Figure: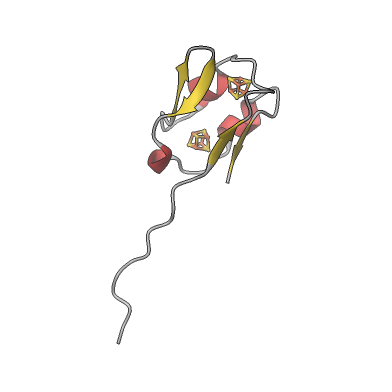
Length: 69
Ligand code: SF4
Ligand code: SF4
């Protein structure tokens, strides 16, 4: 039987290490998909489904606090 259902890629796993993050907001400002938002002094994932794994947030983070898998 042919496989007709398209397999959807799972959403990106975005990890923010609060022991490293200093809340500079760079990741929030530079994300082209508006995936992240600030919640108090730390960024949180608002919409992981929208993430394209472009890795911009990782690149701009000065403290290597955010990773995308
Ligand atoms: S990988 Fe790209 S789209 Fe995903 S959260 Fe980071 S900047 Fe946004
Ligand atoms: S860019 Fe890095 S240090 Fe700055 S708010 Fe985002 S995760 Fe935190």
